[in-house]
Image (tube, rainbow, N blue to C red; front, side, top):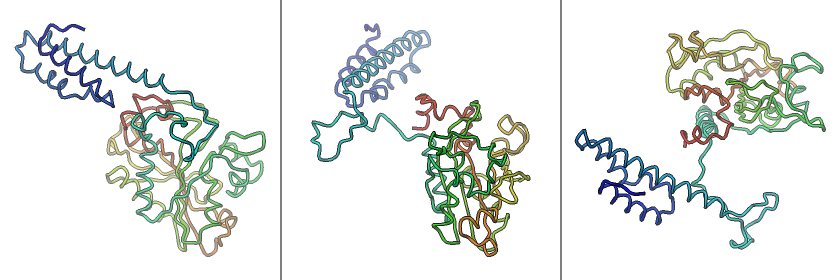
Amino acid sequence: MEYKSPEVKKAAQQLKVKFKKLEDKRAILRAPELGALYDRIKTLPAGERAAFGKEVNRLKSELEQLVRQAQSFKLKALSSIDVTAPFDINVPPEQRPQLLTAENGSRHPLMTELGKILNIFAGMGFTAVESRELDDDYHMFGSLNFPKDHPARDEYDTFVTDEGLIAPAHTSIMQNRVFKTMQPPIRAVIPGRCFRNEDVDARHDHTFYQLEGVYVDKGIHAGHLIATLKTFFKKYFQKDIKVKTQPFYFPFTEPSLEFAPSCVFCDQKGCSICSHTGWIELLGCGLIHPNVLREGGIDPTKYTGFAWGVGIERLVMIKYGIEDVRHFHSGNLKFLRQFA
């Protein structure tokens, strides 16, 4: 491509030579030579800026095309990989399949935020326990005080295999295991992926991440529950919040509550995110039902506890003002690179 401006022509030649030597071809778009050309526009007489700026933009477009071609060639050069044929450290390097370097990827925003969330709870004395992505009817329903054939099961319509295994609709599947493997006082948070038969829209998805929390000790009451969640939200959103609760129903808690923090965007003045109510309905919680404690081997006459479950996507959407939950699993690189 020919350039009329001597400055742009000289910079183009320098940048193309530099491009051939770069390992990370994308770095050419951050080259100081290109940045200097954009800075030069501001110093030119008004009548010369448009023509000069047009040539600089043409040069940037040419460099972007070179980067795309280099990346395309690199991808084509990779041989196909049989992911079902693993290799170990005993396989010579020349016999291993060529893989893309880690610089081509980044952590998913959900995993980044989950790490921050778990760090906050670790500072509050909670142990993290990973959930499962396939479980049985007992841990999904029976251990959580769902009577067989009870209508409450319909609220957790999920996916079932031909063998009768269940894709968990909530991370509460781990409560019984936690109670049987830990001794009070029990403080645990349980992150995991959940699945439900949902109509997908901007606020609902059939696959999502949830964080379960349980706390069991002597003399635990609803005040401890509210104070714990309020402390977490203050640390996560980095601002003071108000909270409100209202009665709800879950088979595994009694009493059961819906928990709503004050809107962190409008400070309760009313905005589109809180539907102009000043509150964001965020999670379900309550005191753990005595039947659930008893099923987990804990004497409910000696111990009480609380539990909650919150969607990770919903927390991240609120924190960053993300309007559509489907972005998280879309594979849209434009969206994901905002968090790289």
